[in-house]
Amino acid sequence: MKKQTAGRNNLGEFAPQFAALNDDTLFGEVWSREDALSAHDRSMITVASLMTQGVPQLEDHLKMAKQNGVTKDEIVEIITHLAFYTGWPKAWSAFNMAKEIFND
Image 1 (tube, rainbow, N blue to C red):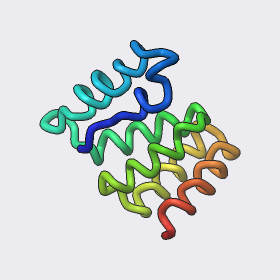
Image 2: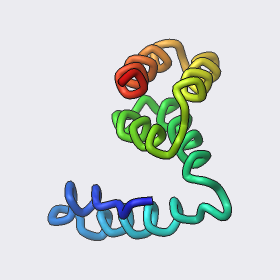
Image 3: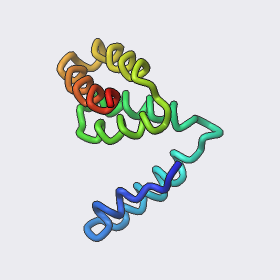
């Protein structure tokens, strides 16, 4: 997995400790433990969690999921399944994002 720098790039000067925790701890330590859980599986879990919350970070994590080998069919199944638990409008929003990302 490539080194994450989004925290420092976006918040480094404003919130340096948060940026360091994002880049070094969350992505540097937790996401890199592929012997415990693959990046593919972490992406599917993260996409599911973000979809339930309806937060804008879902788009970036859908892109990351694709890079981590999550397929269009897997994303479609995740969103369809969660539509019944998290809400139809969130599913529509997630599908619109996923359609752009996975149909290129």
